[in-house]
Length: 272
Length: 244
Image 1 (cartoon, each protein chain N blue to C red):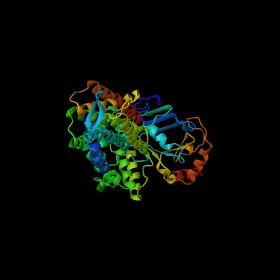
Image 2 (cartoon, each protein chain N blue to C red):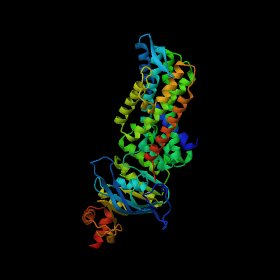
Image 3 (cartoon, rainbow over the protein chains, first blue to last red):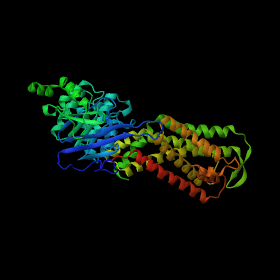
Image 4 (cartoon, rainbow over the protein chains, first blue to last red):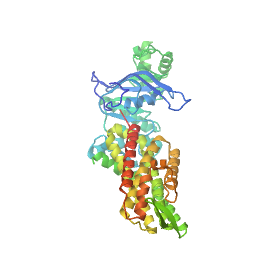
């Protein structure tokens, strides 16, 4: 499937392996401007990434490196200039800025997006009960989105992505504004989704959370560099399958390894 | 209409209902613009070009008839602008969630249409307090066509420009188009002004206001212009909310 062309199915077609819920191969994206004397910005240059069922993947990179652009392309809401993107099964997309209707209540938001997902009224009620309980915002159900705090708005944002129990979850800094309890509840939920076989890709700035991921990709200068957490063989600065070397990857891996959580630390201790 | 369309229209109407500033404008502006002009103008006859003929009409009647399309054009443009700017960011997410392009376009056109009907009714009610159109139904229909034309323009402008720029354009355009170039008091309007959005609709409106005849060509031209703009609006909207 050539991602550069229009008309790709957002729900995608199953990958040949049957375990991959999204794969991006050699994706390129440049933001051009029609205005004179303005420069084009090359964001992605041959980015390659795969997310398997039951896998939690972290995407990291400095500000402006193109993480949200990559997520938009994986979700199918942004065009890409070259490369291929294949998706299998329903997608849940949680953008960084909550894209919700400000003057609808929480209940109405569930109703609208549940209808969009093709859910019955009963299924919508069940999903709403599940998510408002897990993320603890049941008491705000009749409040308009614009009157919610940033953290509660983010809970609704996340819930909209989760309510139809997709096969692939694309989360762009999903826990921005969460309090500690909700942050922990989010990771409990992620673990639950992992066991259900949902593939989860999360953009994160929290390097200390990297032990929660199965795989971490670092996005730097348009290239993605893959690192399997806890797998020393994965700790490599060698070019990934986008065939592009990146010196910064080595330092990233070193830093990440030094500041990482239990799983990566255990791996390093064993190697030492 | 399928379940997705009815749900989206229902939610769109609720969003409008919860925008008090917009609702206040819909009530206040027709009363202010049309009412103020009717009260301020002198009680004299003025020469106006109606259906190609120079006739004398009472200034108060003329003010009521003339300010109705101006008001409707401004308010409909703002409604279209508001509609697209409050929903555009989430509309592509709704598309990704399962709404087809047709579902979403029909929903938004339906919501826009309801808004324009409200604007038209509010303006016509104020206008008929001041004068009785010769042909009421065509007068309302022509007013509605002005509203649809500018409502769709508001959607297109709302997608292309930001909020501030869009508001300026949607305030400025009806002033130039309706108030200056479609003014029956003016003579020898340049030929190119026939290309402006409200040309045919305002001609039909003035005919309906002051004559008992109906100019089919003006109505036909207004409908064709509206349909043409609708096609452009749908294409722009589709492009703006497109997902793979």
